[in-house]
Length: 410
Image (cartoon, rainbow, N blue to C red; front, side):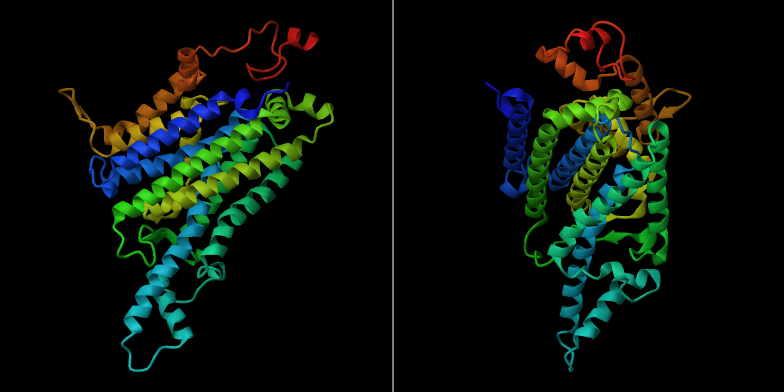
């Protein structure tokens, strides 16, 4: 009898259970519940961390399982944030403008209201006209559709062009990084339609929720982030558990062999690339209302490199490893860069972790790559008694986990 999905993947239930307990515990200790153990600012940090864990799952799916090192997935993350940020900024500004015009002797026309909104939003870049890309900014439903559609379409077009040309390895990584850099440079321009370097701000203020305290709003976003992470983990586990997962692992280990077996390698790659782009965009759409602001610097190539580092430290090829890596590095980064880590006086020099955190992160990445390629997830495997099957013979693929020659003979 074939085992059920959860019987074949016990880690999914364990993860969902731990996430549920964590969510309940944080909720009980939040300011919104009256306990004040966890401040609203730290609750936002936890909510943002859950979003980063979700985008790390997407990165692990495309890199750890499909073998495609994308250095552009934080671009999709940022685009998701921009799409939802446009509605938040428009709706909030509309409320302010309408309230300020309410006492006018002559009621303003609809066009005058729109012009005033445009002046408020784009005055910072010397404009007052709405760009075409803001055509649906007055509709929450349509902007939520664009959260999925815009990054998904960009990933579909880029992936189709790259994979049909059979660009692989480091060349594909460079292409994804170039895409991210081009997008960031475009958004830095004032005429990009997204306020250039100023970005979109005030996103933490939900329209029509002025009477609701930030503690409660932050808790709502924390719940939404936890729910999205749980669904994302479940979806990713389902994708990699069946035949589809076996095929993309085969592509990772030996792409030519999978192609010779008759599988559409490009089609599998394109599907995974587009799916993970959409997951990253949803994570971004939940992240930036908690951050309160988004600007082109968030899409810079270095952000995608950080994402790869998180997954490597957590242990690529293990979904829970990606979550652990993203949560561990993100929270540690907040501690070091927030000035909470004590400086270390050496007499001739004082180490301030705000300045040295990135160096420490880079050294950690090198050490993990050289001495602990399974990352923190490998330590979890050791503690839980999970062992990899014994393998004999030479690798039949470039990855150390690829099929061995004696296994192939059986």
